[in-house]
Image 1 (cartoon, rainbow, N blue to C red):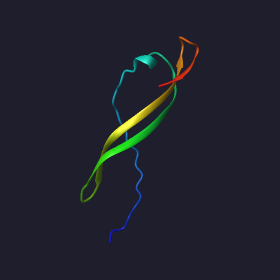
Image 2 (image 1 turned 30 degrees about the vertical axis):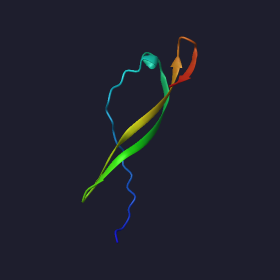
Image 3 (image 1 turned 180 degrees about the vertical axis):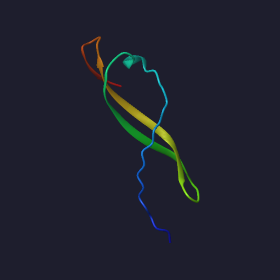
Length: 69
């Protein structure tokens, strides 16, 4: 029987995207929801593959308000 351990880790993802709606606006907050699609269990580690869904809260200078995308 194997011992279960909880390990928390921080991942840095460096991918640049241009989102036309918020190109020149101020971003106030981002809600991130990860979705794990596949996991590969090796001897000393687990490799996860997945997606990140991002919800941005940003200013909109055209209508003088705050929008989400």
